[in-house]
Length: 375
Image (cartoon, rainbow, N blue to C red):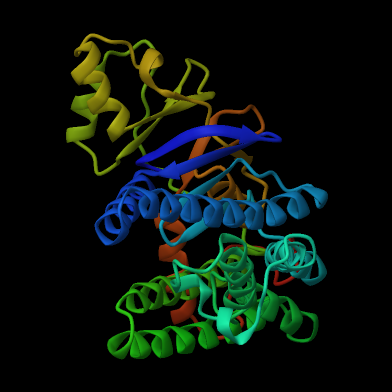
């Protein structure tokens, strides 16, 4: 993610903090300093650091459970509103998604229980407001916040864990697509409720509501697109008219191509037509600024481009777009020559057309069940 700093890695997963998180720490320190002096400022800062350590452990609960199912976990990022772990994919088996989703809140419950049993924390009625009470002990505040994190994350709304738990439970009977539609609708309803409460109590709830609403909509869109792409040949959705670059061409030639096409990303191919990488608009402008117009394309391109065979299903290309965060997926023929491109824009156009087509109509020459995969 842009504007994030890598502070290390744990078991092969990079840990990043967003610059806004650093600003949050500075803001907390300043507010506590004004309210209570240096000691209060350091205590407030220590509490926030420990709080986000608990958030990080929550995310690693998801990460290690996902790894047990063979899912790669490249990084996790800490934001002012919490943590986000990047899983290469979400498990499609309901039982696996349920375990991955529930693992995060379970970590918070374990931390809270340990603080109660070993640390001597108290959850008496006098300490239920410990989170906002700087005079309460650090142990009490951390116990309360961990139990709060567990409960809050189990709200049935994407992208919180409760939304994925709900979808996993519904999917066992209704299938993944219908389960996602129901869970996303409930999530959007929760977002409206949070936004309404935010108008009267805490404006931060409004921002959380917007985040939840957009995340629920995005999840429903992704699952619907994935379902649409099953059984569709990749050739039905690929671009066949596109410009390519040679690795020995100079940046000035790439600029000329950029100005005469509507493309923003250009595949780089060798003399045999084999894909070598991609040169995007950002790489192009950075290379022009740093190395000048005579720099070879092969020296500044983003090496490697995910590819699928032209006899494969569109679902495979869509998975690669998601998992690799790639601007495009190359479609290659039997001799490994690049014959097409699949982008998020082409898939989005197909989804729009799919919604307008009569029920039962499919893209391409394949039958309804050919090349499809199980949900």
